[in-house]
Length: 387
Ligand SMILES: NC(=O)c1ccc[n+]([C@@H]2O[C@H](COP(=O)([O-])OP(=O)(O)OC[C@H]3O[C@@H](n4cnc5c(N)ncnc54)[C@H](O)[C@@H]3O)[C@@H](O)[C@H]2O)c1
Ligand SMILES: O=C(O)[C@H]1O[C@H](OP(=O)(O)OP(=O)(O)OC[C@H]2O[C@@H](n3ccc(=O)[nH]c3=O)[C@H](O)[C@@H]2O)[C@H](O)[C@@H](O)[C@@H]1O
Image (cartoon, rainbow, N blue to C red; front, side, top):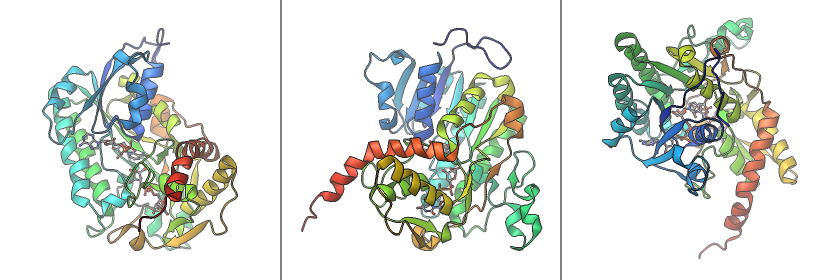
């Protein structure tokens, strides 16, 4: 399986040990899967939850059983963290609060999670001469320059004012009272700190800016494997509505635009970063799919059509409903208008390109959602209500 593997420059790839913090989350679970099935690397998997990687940890007869070890650690307050970073060749930090519903309602937790809790990780890597791959976000770009032009300005159509480039685009956030930006601002500051550790102390780092990675195991379905009142990211919100045959809620008319990339494509990019340090160190990488752009309304329409196909059910009569952001997210919400990643740097350094179309990735993801949750939802909704 793993013998004879070479990097992009033709050099043999040596097995390494990776300390992966946040390994039990959506991205972490896919990265662990990839590392176990296609590489010889070892993973020290750190998280407070392990449900999404349970299938990789048990039974002990799995072929990679001796290459993955789970450490149930909250990085906020656990002295074992430094030891694990020292044992590893590379640390990948994925741990974060990263659902928009939290940014304006739990801004302190959001800032602590994305900045304060990441500080020791950066410090231990720097002090111990260990390489770090840190997960930031495309939200650090905030809003596009284009959205400040008048609605009918032709400049809005000029890519110079909306395509987001790592080295040249500014980071444009709303005012402080729009607490939506607490997450983006904390991520931006940790990026700056990592960059400064590189410049002043020689930290070997790579920063990843994911652009709406989606796929199986993303977030939770409220009331099934997460809190009934919880608000996950849009893929899980819309999946939940489709599974329950409810209208999909379009926040402020669903006019915001996003580019969605399939998690399996994006994980290929991360593996290239892991195995090509000379090409990845010192860089910030956009990882997204510029060809998969839709408005949120178009996403809702496409998900409705795809779900009808995979579930064999016709859509409900009113598939979408408009809702204000204040009603949906509460006070202090704001939004990124448009997110198209510039792919020049990742193309040049790692030769990576996304492959999967939005339709195809929704088809495989919604097939998974239907298979995983449809029965549980049926049971939950048919339970008699206690009097
Ligand atoms: N999914 C995306 O498209 C996307 C986009 C932009 C940025 N990101 C970034 O990528 C990273 C991973 O995102 P994800 O989608 O997998 O999110 P996720 O919520 O599924 O995973 C994060 C994991 O970190 C763990 N964690 C959080 N705080 C922790 C702590 N104090 N100690 C130990 N573990 C802790 C959580 O339990 C969770 O399993 C985050 O940093 C996020 O900001 C993701
Ligand atoms: O995934 C990313 O790249 C980054 O962006 C996400 O932010 P956002 O795209 O705004 O979050 P989603 O919950 O996926 O929402 C996308 C859009 O759909 C809208 N939405 C969401 C849920 C819903 O039910 N209806 C609805 O219209 C939101 O208002 C927003 O405009 C999150 O901040 C992070 O996970 C991440 O850093």
